[in-house]
Image (cartoon, rainbow, N blue to C red):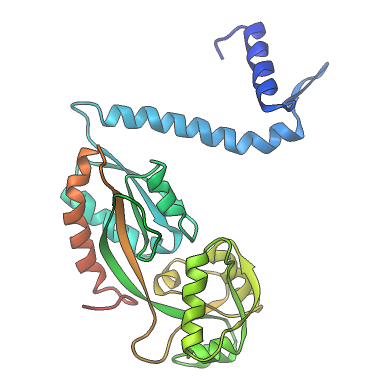
Length: 284
């Protein structure tokens, strides 16, 4: 570590005093982590990685260097929306460097903009009001039913919201994603009946794990079907017109000092046109 042992010991003791816990057990056989030390180890590694990323970003954004854009995205958008936008962005600015950060449901991606972790985020079109927030539409994707393999509804070509509401339901809990929860329940209210939610998870994948284990059905964006595999889940379109959709936008906050954001609008427009022809997306 290129540091003397006494100096290292002093720094460790200072850190322990600051945190108010012992991080190491010191004995004749050497040094090991306490339970508290093990508990914060993952976060400590994340902090170190973030520090390295900060140095890298400073290098990229210094004069004469290629630009760096930090892009956040909701997990479900990984199927087609994120790759299509990245393709469009790198075509518009082939020398740009992009770092990626995924976010769970809810407003976490928007929080990533507010606290400066991301220059851009791909997120749901419905969101709380934030000063300086700007958005460009990327896609409007259909919501689809997710049911267990072998379930009677899996034999159907299309499934209605009323049929889903009659089944045990698994969903992301309201605390994790209040807007998503309220929007889904509003759809069922319009179809004359809310489902009985028997299982919840903090992420969409967790709700789908319950579906795959036969513990319920759920409602997800169409692109999830292209991301999730091996969970014993079948996806079916919904009946009725117009079918429920989820709007996805590219968002950023102005002012933003990153000079590479100037190419963002053109990239978003290109991505939007390409995504309009993707299965599961609403065509213009």
